Amino acid sequence: MADLKLRPLDDRVVVQPLEAEETTAGGIVLPDSAKEKPQRGTVVAVGPGRLLESGNRGEVSVALGDLVIYGRYGGSDIEVDGQEMKILRESDILAKLL
Image (cartoon, rainbow, N blue to C red):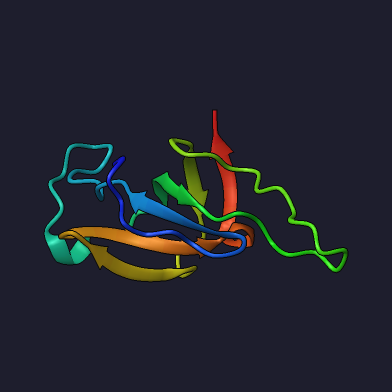
């Protein structure tokens, strides 16, 4: 999503959530009401980093295109150009998938 007209501030990261699972591991199709909110997504924008007391910026440990896992209730849900997005602080990201 190269044309994203959104620039996060400080240590915030914009993530595009992956789609919720449609079926269980056993093949049962889930209705919309039973689907869990996704906790994985792709990083589509990264802020410049947290401002440190020294006046320098702290380095953000995720980059554009990284696949990340975040807390279930972390961040803020927004809609940009008809796409669901999530703005998270870097500390809300639990892991980066390799």
